[in-house]
Image 1 (cartoon, rainbow, N blue to C red):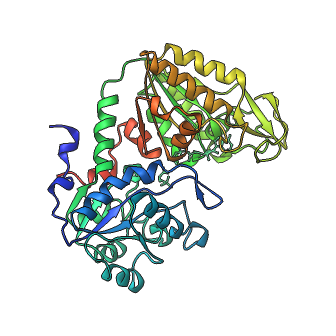
Image 2: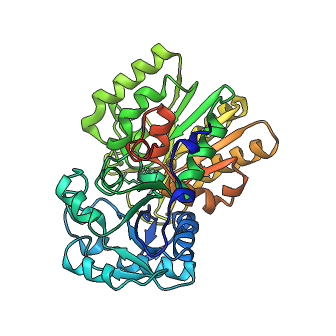
Length: 399
Ligand SMILES: Nc1ncnc2c1ncn2[C@@H]1O[C@H](COP(=O)(O)OP(=O)(O)OP(=O)(O)O)[C@@H](O)[C@H]1O
Ligand SMILES: O=C(O)[C@H](O)COP(=O)(O)O
């Protein structure tokens, strides 16, 4: 039995005229109210279309960012239009997740209609998987479809709790992700090189402890690398860094040593005093960062180190960019490593899998996403899957 057939899918769901709560990941990169990479939106269109075409009433549930309570800057209102224009049909928006406003919006739906509810994380009970909040969400639907593989590592009300309250099914994106990742990485050829970078240091650092037992080389980049460099006693100036997590970083280095996993940290950086595109910058050794400087990208010697390791690797798994790639020239390291991985993949010597909202945006920016063996919508969830951890959102869907 394939991994995906362990789940009920849309093939098993009778959606006609039903109110179908569909959890999607619309946590897309945005700049000035504009979606800069729509991969996650495109990924959920097949599920929305299929339910709508079969006469179901589609009620989309999604989060955006990490709000602490209601936060108008993190409203999903503008995303409804973004989904509608790609779907080719209207998507209504309710400025509430539960309660009378949401109920009224659901009551208006005709078969085939699509509605997006407000950011699920505006209610603190979402992340606590609170039974009352789950019940309130469940009251809005007859069926539940989870199409948010990228959020499946969270045991939240809309990603896990609902699956126990309503008949639950995997959406097409969820199904494809589970199958494709299992196929690509079931028995990865070694050496396996993992790249973990990006900005979500506190939520991803812990899992590196397990990852070092699974991969041969772990390349650490972005804000994650700064945290390790600081833990080693280096002055990282004003760089993105979680100083409190120095102890965890050192433990991970010990675990890597014990597991025989090589850790590759940056040796140089593009250092700047302003966080903006084209900020004046210099190439600096990681031992020579001034107190007012930020390491906004890995430097050329670091890139050379990574590319050299990559040439010997047979598999690369990648989440998190090397730098603030949205702001040129701090995209240089990410683009260089992405292109090197794409070339080695084209040449047939490397299997390349990458994932994450911003990571995919970075690969698209480098023009190489379609040359990778597989690109997942998921970042944190992809890393936890790699670690071998059961993902609560996936587990709750098992038959
Ligand atoms: N050195 C750095 N300093 C500041 N920001 C950085 C640095 N390196 C990377 N970043 C930022 O990290 C962000 C991406 O990190 P993140 O961990 O969210 O990756 P992701 O691929 O979106 O994964 P996920 O899907 O789990 O969110 C980008 O916005 C980028 O600007
Ligand atoms: O971007 C992601 O990785 C997912 O949307 C999950 O977001 P979170 O890390 O804020 O839970």
